[in-house]
Length: 154
Length: 244
Image (tube, rainbow over all chains, first blue to last red; front, top):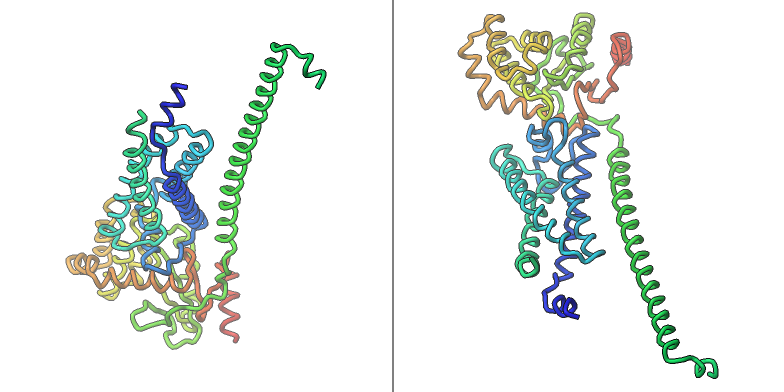
């Protein structure tokens, strides 16, 4: 009874925020998979909204050694999506804590990639932009989860 | 009713407890099944999405009949019979080993067909994998400003392994310029000029718009051709074009 009482008084995450983060992470996962597949097929993704995708995709910053950055992105976004799914399934706050923790390097790396696109390469790739903005939004969502739920549930 | 009446209080309690246990078990089983279904669903969607993207990317419209986005223009590097209607255009990357392999074949074609065919070269540096390709393109442009584009073009391909992975490749290019008897200071200035950068970039952009998938890519009279596997195949394609 004590446990139930304790649980009922502690705030729960807003399910719409969680759903939004899940959709965002899955959509970004798809974008990253697309970029990865294009990389391995040796093709340059076509861009319609903004020019310059080819410049970003063929720049030396688009891969670390033989591994394209997009593959790391795909792994990152899938992990974030799975963590949210674990929370939906088990209602364990540990999954949300991991989500919040992982969102920090994701956010910093996205800022670095945006800087490279705008100030070093001088071209912006729409697909990369979608993934980077998505990562920043996920960090904002993670901050919301931390301040509304996790801080009071150590 | 009679049977129920016959049950003692303790038995009733046990029965109720048993029923509760059964309900709890069913509820747990349902939760487990729902959870399993959710994870199977997620795995299915993820795998289907990856398969779908791979399928769509791999089955794009073939670019075999791609036409050149821009016609051969004054600023293109051309040699051979400049008046010929048979034009072999090569998009190449100086750091690309395949391009270096094709280089003797193209030179042989030039020797054999130079009087009947116009040979055009355009840059397509794959910077993603070849860090020195774009500077090499600029070096050839700089040599071209002093009338030795094709000499530098040959030198870059023939010595590709010497500079391809050199951190200071531009100094190697300066050495080549010296060997070709160019004004070295002028060469340095031209190699780093916006004109050279723009020329290489414009070539790349034109190739990109024309659907160049990699290097080398050859266009014969504006039509992309499959890369011939040897000199005889190349010769046959040119002969066919000349016969038309």
